[in-house]
Length: 213
Length: 213
DNA sequence: CTGAGCTTGTGAATTGATTCACAAAGTAGT
DNA sequence: ACTACTTTGTGAATCAATTCACAAGCTCAG
Image (tube, rainbow over all chains, first blue to last red; front, top):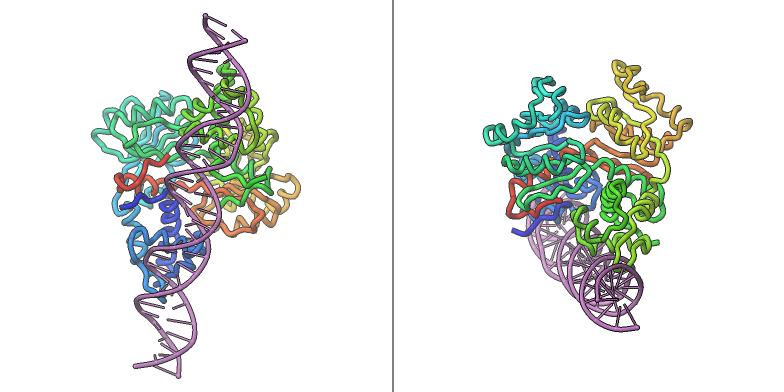
């Protein structure tokens, strides 16, 4: 199968969110045009995106909402639970640990780690903050799939390497540094500073830059 | 001037972070190769990115670190303070409000708003949570540049429209919906669910998908 | 059953981003 | 001053993503 572009996967995620919404509102069938309108793209793009994975619609009618929802969940690998650990019990890490939206979407936060003795042992929401030194022992036992990295930039690379050593293969990195890890490790970056600076650039050079969306 | 790609602006932001770091460590000069290594890209890409904005290096030597830092800050519009308001005092909003990294980088959080009477009036870090209904009065007075939107999905579109009506032109949207706003408004989306689902896809289809970075 | 009206699925065309490759310009050692 | 070595800046070539455009398939009304 052909390599699927990152941008396509992102859009599938957006379509899925709207589809789930539509299904709970009783919508039976939905056109590429409607999906495009809600996803901020074009109908041709929607059809192309879906066509990489198969043929889901009926000509003249559109896509069956419930079936397409199930197919997208399947394609995205959301037909299972993902076990997530959070590394770094700072402001962002804490907020994420307490945010219930993830669990709802199948991402189950099973543990939080930190290096700071003052934080270790404290409890939120049934989760006790563990010592980061335990990660090498815990990961082979509890087999988390994804680590969310919310440690200071200086430590991000070293901590990431430890996680990989312990057996983690997927990392959601909040530190504003580019992690250098073996090729088989999947990394996604969330970089708030970058987003704000993107806004700063766009607002400063309004005529040059297109409207980011 | 030619339209600059979003991906280019993102990379400039990454280069800038590393350059600032280098300057504080006393580095005087830096090559496109070194910037590429740290930014997770290629030297040709670095040179191309910079070439859109001018000629900053010396052949045979590289780029003067301090000067390039200043130029990038200038290009990105970081030679000023940006006034930021946070809408939504939930888990994420609260964490962002208390996170000092933004202020350090020139993004000054001047207010937090919420609709929930139980939250209004509570105080963090010198910031009192204000009633969202006051936003129409405050914005024309205090002239914030950017609104960070951390309200539930269902409310995001309506709240965004109110913000635009009040005079906001830049929005950092954390709600997993595509906002539909006038073309002159700049929107950036941070969508954690999308990132996690991207990881889920990549981990599920390891052979098909490239390593996202 | 027929014709008008939608909407999908998809090659082809286009537009956009990245990589190549090299001349030009500099450094440093002798 | 000359040679060997670096590194930038940039057109040209390549690779990738999006948009176009239309045949084919389906619905529905009469």
